[in-house]
Length: 404
Ligand SMILES: *Cc1c(COP(=O)(O)O)cnc(C)c1O
Image (cartoon, rainbow, N blue to C red):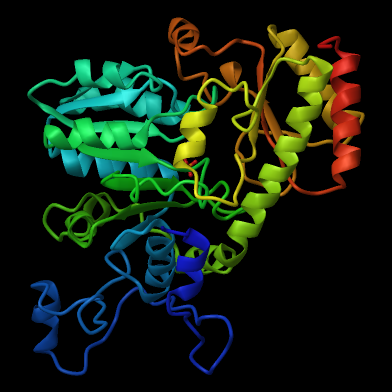
């Protein structure tokens, strides 16, 4: 059984040049060779980062970025990872690489607003069409398959309604038709290992839980060795030639935070569970995957790596934008419960009204179809403060605005 925390601990730890407990940061843009004859061999791929540690230029591979990539691939159970400047560039380059200039994508309709815009608004201009389906209904994906379908795309736990996709079932229908399954695991690192469940490529916005400090933008693509090198191909590689290069200093920062990702995920989950249970007792309209009445609770439980809980995301449907805003204003300005901000995976709680913020790229009729209420407040529960204080603050909040 794949245990991401153990796998991460067991992978070779990188030390600093002088025996430092932290790895050194290789900031060079370019790399020398001892003999000029070696250079053409690197260009031909005879030598390279995974062949005796030969590096060329940091838009291609960089040793510090590769330390992070090695840790991530251990965590995911994939052969390789490629890090990028943002989550959205990890998604865009992965899909462009697989589609190779044309074709059809079947995507969950419960996805990050930026990804929705990429697929619905931008990709059609470049010859790539997308059909959106309900992620909780595997049969809808299967029914949408066309001869030119190249990718099935979903998030493990969808943003923002928390709809859960059946990764194993999707892998099965995809692979029967030679289609690639790409999964965005941003909400559920450590908790779920999509590649182990059958996904071909796992993408991350590391901006969120993986980094955990809300101080960098970064992304990752975890895949086979072959796909990683396709992305970095000097003639056709979408990461190499579109150039969303991560800075080695950012990669270093993230690699220093991966060792406590497991601890953080457990604590995000503990807090979100405790707050959700109290909200449920009070009769508030809370949705949290860890509650037994969550529609895909069993399915999610069957996919989880044990010991990390059900994640840090919960929603409260306030029905109207006014009530949602009143709740967020109260919780931030009267209680210091958390901050009104998009994003997630921070150590403090972040809250936003999804319909008019991170999912505003999704048109109103599509928001309705995906079950997104205009008054839905998404909470990314942090782990600062005591649990007792946080529960009491939330309780006063929902009472104040009349949710219970
Ligand atoms: C934030 C987010 C992205 C985009 O990532 P960036 O790092 O902001 O580019 C993609 N997918 C999900 C699920 C996200 O939450």
